[in-house]
Length: 175
Image 1: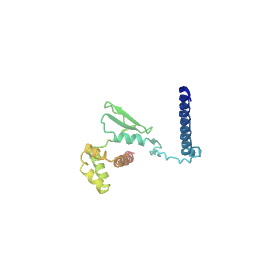
Image 2 (image 1 turned 60 degrees about the vertical axis):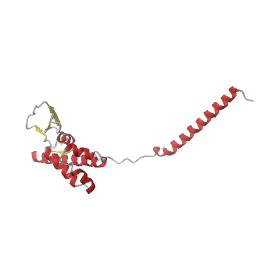
Image 3 (image 1 turned 90 degrees about the vertical axis):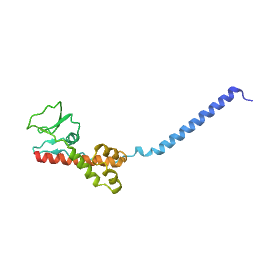
Image 4 (image 1 turned 180 degrees about the vertical axis):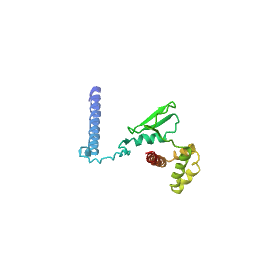
């Protein structure tokens, strides 16, 4: 008849053996799921946005202009440096000298509402009906968008596209 210590050792060995078997099974499962990791992966190059070139041959920071155009904080004035193509942010109401620095136009509440209306018109009837009542108020419009993530993502893409169109138009008009 085994002693108490022998029984404890047997139990301990059994636990360790089952633990090792479970670990080996998990390792085999992991290897089966991950076996494709070592294969060569074909990477498709991501298209980088083509920088917008001015007539003087300067690359214009279109992303910076988009952010400046969409900024409605009223705290920062944004200027385009016509020599470098960079966007310069100025606080405290200071103005930069023309002709080198041109003030980036800001969106107006009217243009923002026009964007909301244009986006709503382009939607399918169920989504359109949900947003039509909220078009006049930016807060209500955001609240209605927050109920559908895909719709919200579509709105921000639409808004960015419209901002880029407005910036490109401004750049053409201002030379």
